[in-house]
Image 1 (cartoon, helix red, strand yellow):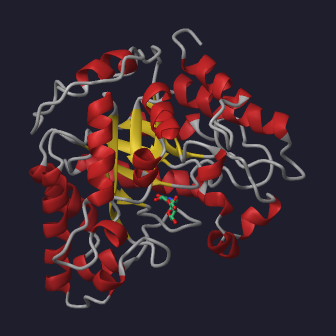
Image 2: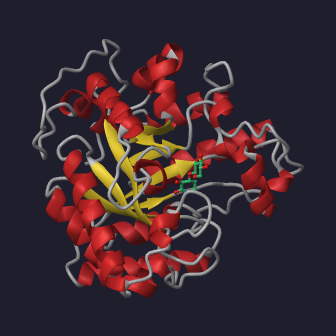
Amino acid sequence: MILGSCSSDREASTQPAATTPTSSTSATTSVPSPARTARLGAAVTAKRLESDPAYAALVAERFDSVTPENAMKWSVARPTATTWDWTGADAAVDFAQRKGLQVRGHTLVWGQPSGNGIPAWLDAMTDPGEFTAAVLDGITTQVGRYRGRVQRWDVVNEPLNPLDGDVHRNVFVERMGPDYIERTLKAARAADPNAELWINENGTEYLPAKAEGLVELVRGLKAQGVPLDGVGLQTHLFVDGPLRAGGISDVVGRLRALGVEVAVTEADVPGGSPNRDAAAQEAMWRQVAQECVSSGCVELTVWGVSDADTWLDDPGLRQTVPFLAAFPVPTRPLLFDENLKPKPAFQAVEDVLAPGG
Ligand code: XIL
């Protein structure tokens, strides 16, 4: 569904047509969501939703969907193979349910060896049988816990190599085999037959070979009848300079032709570089929204609510991502400023997402 997804889904999201809620709540937000042609989502910090009423109100009033930025990753939610910390994830899901927002669960299977990708305890599990059981049991437990309350999951994050279109030979491939994507998607389907199942990838807007690899991966999965409903394009635009026209819409169109939904799932547009002043940054936001909407994306999620929240200013990240050196801190890459005031880019995006925009 594309048209009218937002105001109607907001009402519906406590009783989604395609899902069976495990508990009944009512939406308490009194502010109607503007009608939009695609969902507007934001990555959120569970702690801030609880501790900062202005932040929570902004999320409830301005967005249709939330993605917990870190709280559902196993590096955070699953301290060991057999123990879980649901604090942050529960807070985000409960908040969304109270406010009538949808939830994109993020993420179950992520082979990135550094940062908050694969947790150390799982990396250390070298026995293939033990590893596979831990992965599949974890999916069953987590997806099952939020059955009916998380509308869609980024089941597999970043299945391809960072800089080309080949499947990343990560620990999941090494220990479960190349069919780990199929097996993890099937485990998620069994745990919540009504949740949409997505894979999520980065860099396709800059790297044509990677876009090609993603299309081929999805083509293969669909041809085998693997349960896959959607493909997320992260869209972290931190290569200094313009984005080629069609950088987003081309791959959206090719993926949709394979019978999956497509969304921009983690957009951010840092500014302040030699090649990206404030006007260029705003124009780029407009381009992201326009390409997304015109090619039929169902969702545009931005990676953080305000400029105070962005991961791009993190000193640790900046040491490992050389591209970011072009953008001085603060990079101010989001739609609301440090004081939670809407930036011109927010209005630009809203104008594009408005019906007929
Ligand atoms: C990032 C978070 O924003 C940071 O807070 C954390 O330190 C590292 O992970 N691709 C993804 C996201 O799929 O999960 C990442 O989130 C950003 C890149």
